Image (cartoon, rainbow, N blue to C red; front, side):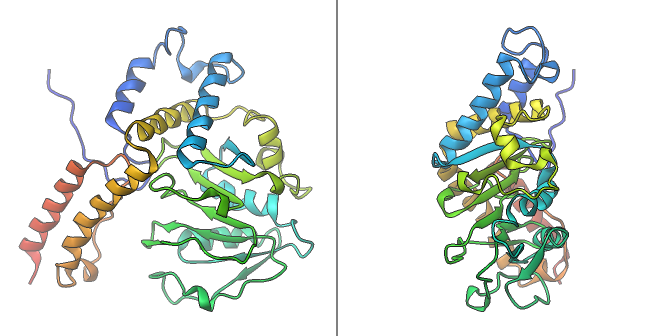
Length: 324
């Protein structure tokens, strides 16, 4: 029998999962740890699933050292669902029903557009001609009566990532961390809300993790659907509706893999090394990879050094063949 084909996966999300996690999923697919059924058919109200979701939350808290005054919830709808959920839950924190948005790429632009349905949106910096950099914070004009300040930590479409946490002068800071969640340590206490789809760094598609500070609960607009209400989800321990059970289970396995491989700090060290391998080639290409466009490669947590070496070799060979 031929060995199974192994493709090197640099997908932007859903993205590569650790090989050991895939093997664990395979082993437990038909019979989860002697229970006699698959997680795919397991009741979300069962004691077995209660242990799965509790363990997943415990690992999120441990890996990010989340303070006790934050809730961790698991919801559906992806990042786009949170583009609505954030204003629906937070825009009435202050009577003006307005929010500040830092727009540095496609995802924050989409989030700002969605928020306009529920209140006034202020873009805090001069309009950017192109999404190639983070606007200097000295050019930002924060609104004193804004309910929150929103930004996207890493804009994958345009390749723009914050390397700092914005100073928002005590305002509630909201962050879409979908593409760099647990790729490095982060001080959760600096934020009011963090959300991230699991499908890039911490699992498969289907579940979104939301970390929300306790004092921000209870302010949802009357028209907020209950399934998007942070308070309702937190009060029911993410069981207000049937959660994406299998995705929560996969996330727990990936988080355990991150923990066993040194945690967020180790992920940051590995990701920095992987990025350096690729950017060194780009920087030495005399503008070749900047001018011709090209392919997109995402180096999420599960992508290995060996994977990146293959990409680097391909890039060097391509450069040698095609550079004038």
